[in-house]
Length: 147
Image (tube, rainbow, N blue to C red; front, side):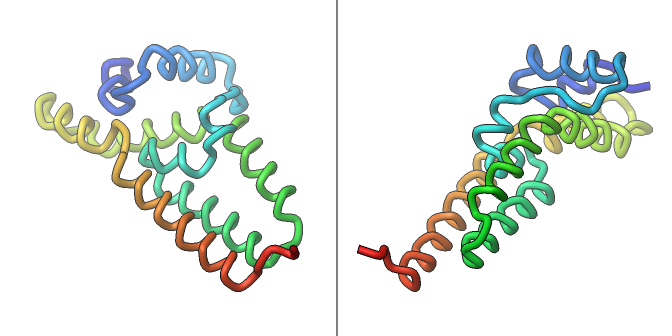
């Protein structure tokens, strides 16, 4: 059984926001729950919360669409809305996986592994910004402004 103490170790920052959200979502069995950080920062928020696969997939889609140059705004809004509406659910599932992967360990080892697996990633966020900076620079180099 997953308890709130385990979630607190994985979430680390903003437990007072996420744990009640997780409880409400589990009680109501709903996947939709609004997350402003997910909406405004989408792939950056995903990577910051150590959901690397989801974050880099969203970033890759966003960059790919930027180079294709069609439906860029539409895709950007879809990604933002998906992260805003389903971000808490994705994060809940991410935290549950981290906890379940370490559920059978003794308490001290489990606590240590959950703290290292959870929390936030400033390094991941820096990597995202570098990728965005480079890809935008390349895009601007080969697609100059029309004026």
